[in-house]
Length: 508
Image (cartoon, rainbow, N blue to C red; front, side):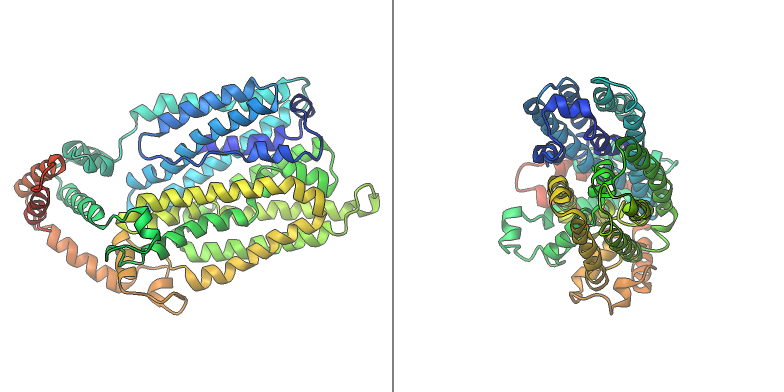
């Protein structure tokens, strides 16, 4: 995710580098500039695609560094975007599959903090090289991302595979061993036996509940989507859309451009302010780690939305008073800088990490992987649109361009408050049960849906399940594992019978 953050931020500094603009033939108001920055692939991947994605990004980086014209840069950004899409779709899922439920939120937020760290580093590198001259001013910052790729090549092969992915492939012993290693215990520990049974059962249920995309969107779910499948898909996708419509990439990609064209700063000062802003973004983004579980997803989304709305409203008001070239209005532009900084504080608390966490939590077993993929695709599609319209929007509308993001952020408040159930403190099974109970569309009156603490009825249900699973001995667990492997390799009509034997043997 640090590589993602670096790649996300590096073009913000490169875009105002004169040698880059001259080499690519861009003018100060060229709409092609926004197109090159916005081109990313939407190809999504699963476990073990990190290495593939990194290799594709390496090819893209080499082509970008060696580019001498727009066509090669366009192709290079598309290739890098495909690799980036693979990595960003895979990393949160991999993290979730190897994390405890009580730590899932914190670990995903830590992922996003690494993203900010990469973004901050890119800002400082582009600022430092702005004092040089010639092609190195922009070619070296782009090339530096290869350092992150080397780190990935050196570490990813040694990291544990997802236990759930291994179980889905019928590699039960490997799955149990990695689960035991992650829990610092042995494979015959009763907890590991219970977890193994639950994974086997969940995978079987997921396959039974799977709905093809075509049938899903045509409404032909055949009774398999009884847990509000489409609603849950749209809730997860909505968080990713709101993150981007909140205006984060207006400043992530183009803060130096914004500070030059809207505030009236010099290029050097714009770079320095952007670099300093990235440090405060990193610090305050880290504050989300201890509160994402205790304060809950709903509160943080509401808190961040309100804060971002206030910041953009004040930025809009101040920039409306700025007349470029008039020294008497400079003070209004300078005052707006403080609220660009404050915007990142609010974004870091909530909208930075939750959109990558919520889709993996809210979707059902049968749609979890596809739900996370659709969420990531939504992020990239809206990201493309925002980055595409920003340079011409600022050039054509001036300060009025920021009204758009003010309105969007305000609209998130009723959307989250009325429609979004809380997921903090709940197991994934709790959320399945909640949606099976046919909850109303407007959840704000349902305490079980909005409480940041786990409802008592879910706690009671879990205790009952634990007592039921704890009765399984090691012998029957081994027998269940063997039957499960057989069911995975079965290619005839006996597969269903094998799965039923697994469930009976495992006490399910």
